[in-house]
Amino acid sequence: MRWIAPSVLALLLGACSPGSGDAAPQSTQPAPAVHPVSGLPVVPLTISHASKVHTFRVEVASTGQQQMMGLMFRTQMGADEGMIFPTDPPRTASFWMRNTVIPLDIIFVGVDGKILNIAANAVPYDETPLPSAGVVKGVLELNGGRAKELGIGPGDVVGW
Image (cartoon, rainbow, N blue to C red; front, top):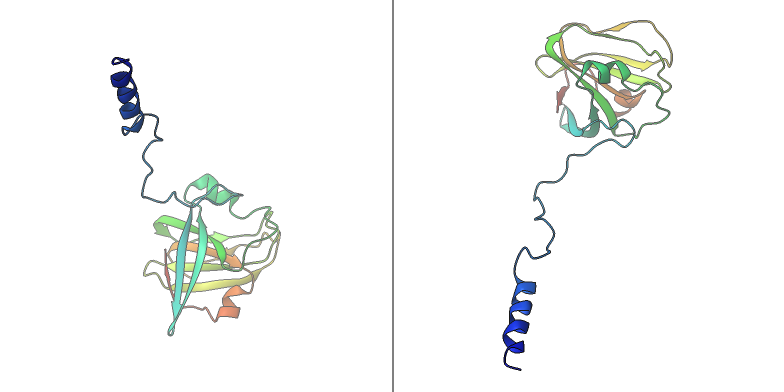
């Protein structure tokens, strides 16, 4: 019987030791948010004007392919959602609504982070070019009419 006790003790100690069947340590960093439809990363974006700050959750279309697809074929988008198209290096930009089902506010953000101009309520499927009023570091798309509803306009500051 004496040999059983040390064996049982060794088994019990082994079962309690760290790493013996425990799951891998969990990261303390949250997983980056990803949009369920596009698979694009989702980041917070703010627009500041007067004393107000509006916060949105926007998909980041950073590659040429992602930017070509944009919000085409989407049938809905949340009130505080959108898509940002970073332009690096900054340049003039022009957007259209080819295959875009929902009306959009297309907001052109200058290199200083301020809104240059807004193509408000861009018409679904319309292929008329909607140009920036200068060099942009990004273009933001929100639901059509959202900028007016929130009082957002040229000169307001955008950060993402």
